[in-house]
Image (cartoon, rainbow, N blue to C red; front, side, top):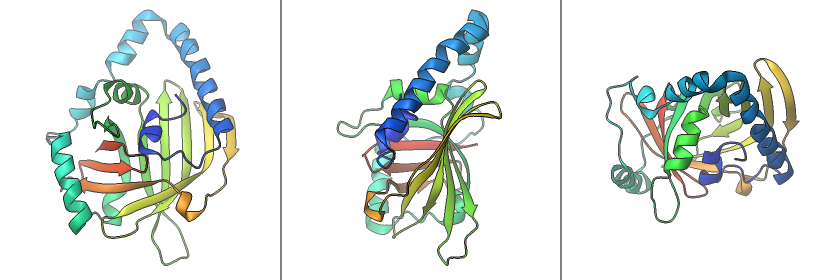
Length: 222
């Protein structure tokens, strides 16, 4: 489970050294049984029961698009642009679903795990002296008091547009206590991961994109 499973499906961890990912995976796998032991059977059932897709979707009455709808929107975005602008992306985005590269089937196991681990994509405006508007980007998972966070920077490029980015910091925390922190080098431009943005709901309720690795993802705004 090297960091976010979603990040593997979308190919956004290409710039992160493998040895750091192995450390990440080992820490997560070590934490999970401890949490089960501490929480106990009853609390455990309640904890997972509160993290269903339905709970996430109760925040909005907007109907989420299916894969076929997203594929149509993707063709339109490639040929004519998605119309997605910088300010419309600002906010916290909760993961909902991922369709894998190749057969395009919905990956129910990965999707469920990412919801259980509260996979979150946060985009904020980065203060910069340059003319190009940049995002401060944080991709994280949370399990009880523990969290793993990748922080970095990104920007919009092209008509579709693309959102190239990179992570320069990884952190593991227990509540507010930092257990592990590691800086990461910025890759060359061609090596950076990206999201090819597809569509955003007119009121900003959901966002879809395809990652560099081919995974098709859908988020719901928190």
